[in-house]
Image 1 (tube, rainbow, N blue to C red):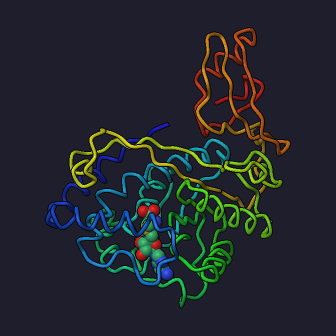
Image 2: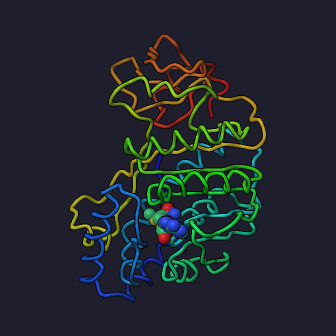
Length: 327
Ligand SMILES: C[S@@+](CC[C@H](N)C(=O)[O-])C[C@H]1O[C@@H](n2cnc3c(N)ncnc32)[C@H](O)[C@@H]1O
């Protein structure tokens, strides 16, 4: 599944990149990649200068937009009656998750983005002026304002354990409809998603996606495996230059969990983990199942309609074993 950047965001990013020197942005990108790769909680803001923020917007926003938009698409499919009018994007930076939610939910009318970095808020405000942009510090802030949709995208990894648990508690109390947490698709990001998932279950939320069940994650019992997904990102020429990359695209790996305050009807029978394998007359999918197990499922040509549907299934899609239920 891939989502193009909304044209307004693409144009805005081009305009933003013209405000900083490309050489300086390239140096910032190198430093930021290093900082994010370290995976350690940040002891000071990682985005320091206006150039860092311009670099972040140019090379990371397309990827975080793609990840959040892809996760929200699974929410939309699993929970079609969820029509948020308000969003709170916590640690929203330059607003990738605000753009993704605006794209996914046409009725979204009020968007508030909170972040500690003033320059990020300034860039975000220029890109999406209709949102409210507020300076906010996780460690010292109080309760969060309520919103139908609360998003926390690529933030938890920058917080220490205590601040992370407190933020999750506040986000759970603020999310009147749905809480979405997204992290990098690494074993460490997945571990933080497992913590967020458990906090959601303890708070009485229903897991909407990606899990087709409310039980323990079966992948924790499989050494070396972790639940993550992939979103294709088309790179602009500037993106390629800043990352010193040749390919015209990259695949952003992410882990996520979405929990709803209300019970969600008709959960799928499974979730496709990893790219399905296609062999002549046969599709093999690794499925996380409604009974809380993970196992491969083979659908052969003999299955008729189900096979035709299986041929189009992608990594991350929900799976229904009756073809009439499939999207
Ligand atoms: C990797 S960026 C993600 C930005 C955005 N959510 C996205 O998906 O593109 C992490 C963001 O979290 C913010 N952040 C990290 N620690 C924070 C803290 N202690 N208080 C407030 N914001 C924080 C950073 O300023 C930064 O904008």
